[in-house]
Image (cartoon, rainbow, N blue to C red; front, side):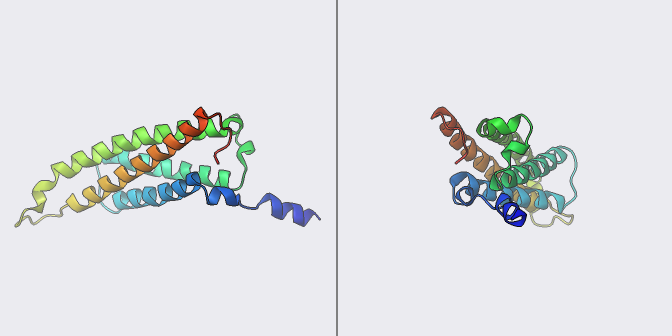
Length: 163
């Protein structure tokens, strides 16, 4: 009997998996992983440290939020679990703002490295890596913005749950 209770307590919230927030979270995780792997695969300096911090920090928190919601364990989060929709809304708004800043930083570095794409340049050219990271940072910004808009709409309609 105790085994049966344990199994049901660890079951996935199937409605979350099929919902818009669930799908957006998966896309955020994929694009966020692509962003920080792209940056971490090359040598970086200066403001790119900020971009790497934003990418890894929000990827880890998104992973935590995703599994907390998927397993319906919001009540385990002290204080914030009682206001899970608002918590997610604020989180996504902050992630949007910081990913936009990361996109601006990466775009700046991309623009600064355009000279190395000319013929005859013999050193390592980070242009393609910076451009790829800029695209992934922009995609992350867009995905977090969509989730923010969804949760804002849900909150304004008086919703209490994410789905």
